[in-house]
Image 1 (spheres, rainbow, N blue to C red):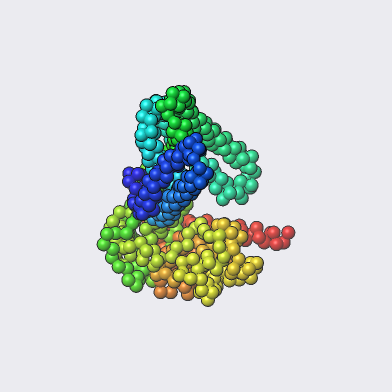
Image 2 (cartoon, rainbow, N blue to C red; image 1 turned 60 degrees about the vertical axis):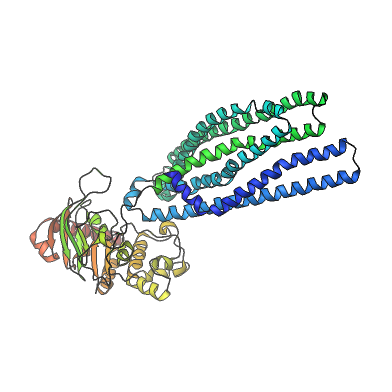
Length: 588
């Protein structure tokens, strides 16, 4: 499967490869012609020909040498360009494929491992399809043409020179197996090290807060040492291969001097022929010698293709239907029918059980419940962030599995609990889902999210680069930026997943006041840990262990005295203690 996929890319760039192979054949002709021309020139010197003739033959030798170099350059450029193009195509296809994969895929794969496959492994594939493939295609042609010329010149001596070469096949197979396993181990080691480095840098604040620098340094040192030993094994195999293969041409030269020298002394071979034959053997040295390096490239590239194919072979569980239903001017009606959901690949209990819920278009739904009750999971199923079976989740009466992903998700804006920001300007983060960054739209969304008042404190205002994951901003500012990003899209359905958990009560009240205007004309789903956040919702559902245990309005649920009422009492007690603590701090 992996080589079938690779063949697809090679076929897409077949023109460059065909031109490269054709010029390789031409190069083989010049490769053989050069030793013959050298012998021709030596013959002129041995026979004492006039200087003009010697000069003419040397001029021919110069032309052949220049032409040989030019053809070699052209063949290398064509094949190396094709390899670069394939690297570019695979990298883009790999990135596009990663974006199509569902969130469940990223639960099983480490970020550093994926980065290593997109960078280190792709480089190995390029080297295999460039210098590696050139040598694999070129070496048989050069060796075959050279051997044909050697047998034409002196069949007996050529046969004797070939005696040690069958041994090379056995040696190459042994080295090939060792090289493949060694290179695969190195690529895995690089992925482990990259993953640890990425996690440490991303979580450096936690590392410092818990004084874990020595532990992470020791872990990184262990990974580096393991990678070092694996690379040393590759270096040993890689160093032994050319060391052994370089002995074979030397054995050939010993046979030429032993047998060919005797033939010259006996008058059976001219000095020019002896030099030509010696040059042929010398010419064989480079392609034979380089085979050790080529085996390294091919084996490392094969291991990398295998690792890349593991990612590309992961079929997106969430994809567009074969015959999608158009979602034109969505109203925002949401319905869950007998929904039971378990996370893909998990053997735990279902996260949601027998959920039946209808949310009218243009209404506000509040979802509350204890930690781990399934609140975020329920909201995540609306834009199909996870795989769900047909017949359970509907938008405007249409099964979400029958709607194309792009129009579905363009009609929904979600503000996740973890407010992820990109390392670009604040304005670009707010306008992330828009076709372009329009200052008026950015300003309007920022004002609605109560973010505008903080912009004046930033060094470059809206043009301030917020850093990786928004490290330049506070937790509340990050949440408000994510909220502004969602509001800028003007979606039919707005999902707020505990969006106000990191802001103070005063800011929360100001945001809710503005949001009441924003909510007009759209369906809003609010996932909250604070009961006060959903008190004005048209419908509130209470989840517990994945089931809806209560539903109603704020007033009716308080009157029932159930789980919702207990959560409200607990929240009120927490707010009262916090207020008392602030009052004591103010007096003290």
